[in-house]
Image (cartoon, rainbow, N blue to C red; front, side, top):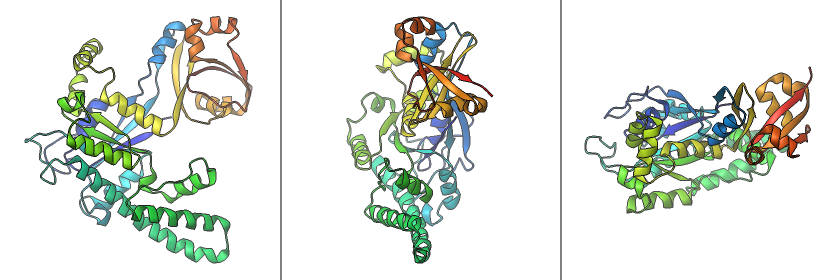
Length: 366
């Protein structure tokens, strides 16, 4: 299972450079607006140190990690909701992703032009969010007009959609991202069906220079950006795209030394990947043995048979039971067999809800 995260932002903010650092090249990065027109797509590995530990415990011949899809989308400009720049083409590409990484330029570089002539990350994110909000308001107006006509039928589902659409319209008109009860299955389903940009899982990716990466949040520009993120429930992740691109050319041992010199224990790109993964409420379970250790991605709340179906559809169809050892117990008892001998292996049935870090073996019959 691979979710898609789209890099969204103004032209010349470093989206393609960031994409290349993540995916090992492929996107043209140049000093002029709309260098990227058609989206670039790349698959990246989800870093998870538990895989190496499990592979060592079970003497696995190979490792197969989870992956994510990142998409480098053409730059947005003021007026995109009315067709400016790449307009509807841009918005159509955004609509195809599962999560949005709003890339905002913080770095200073006289050789790279800014579309508005000055570096102002607070203003940039305002422009991006305003255009998405305007597009959502336009969509809601059309939805409301249709729902009002259908209301004559007295359909309860139409009434529920109309009420939520009106609520969202009011929130957007106040310059706020729409909020709804995510614990309410019906409301969540209606919200997803409306297809709004501003309810998609999203975060801000601040493309900084090396100094700001070390001391993010200490100057006025980054403080303003963090304040905006807090107001709109958007986590802000600092990334130095140029630095990440340089690290991508190094051997793993050299990367560790480089990170030590910078005083960091996690790269910006790793934080970007993990943030997207978490926003979509994804968790990881594992299968581990002599042949391979493999990570599998599922959504929080997935039951055992459906998780087994990620491995093979027959396992879901013919599910009998699941043998489960937690990652913590695998680590404490030095592997599957020792954990089983210590009474840490659990037998779970069809109603079991998977937990992050479960190591499993599925019993099935077809």
